[in-house]
Length: 226
Image (cartoon, rainbow, N blue to C red; front, top):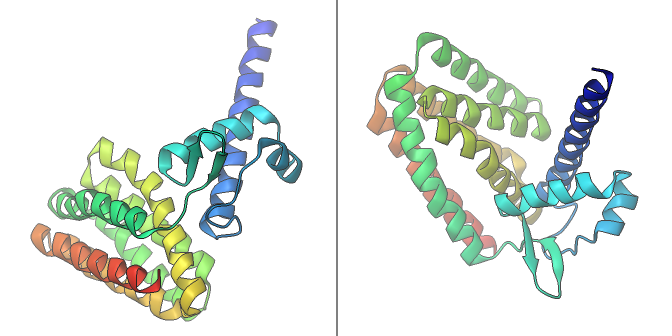
């Protein structure tokens, strides 16, 4: 019994360290602290993050699945570039996930889910007024995850948090290039407000259209900056 408990505790600790390493690397990559093209040598990451080799490898594998980390023979692991082709692939995927997700949410959302989305909308506006970009990003993530939950599709719920990390990195890319986070945040909030309003009225096509129009604008802006 004692041995099994120790094994269980060790496995839990390993998962916890792997999650910690993943969250640290997500933040560093999406905030462009680790720039596109940066080599990700395990030894350097172990020294920098003060975390062991196994959790680092687990985190890098997860980030590879998400498309934030790439691997090439003879080059090893590195932060994926932000290229026109990469951006196009991200937005093609989001158009297939985010827009139908909004339509399903409008059809299926219950009163509690609509209320939660409306609260998030208020918090998005508040974070803009306070000039708090990090809180805005956190609330934007909540918006997408809550919308995914309201869609009541388990596969959408699983994939949205992963693709959102790509969105965060592109948001910081735009911020780095333009220095104008207020307009960037307002564009995202306007889309969220339009979608939430459509969901509250159970207007699926309207919610889907709001997302598609926002994705088109975002892609054009990023292409302009590349």
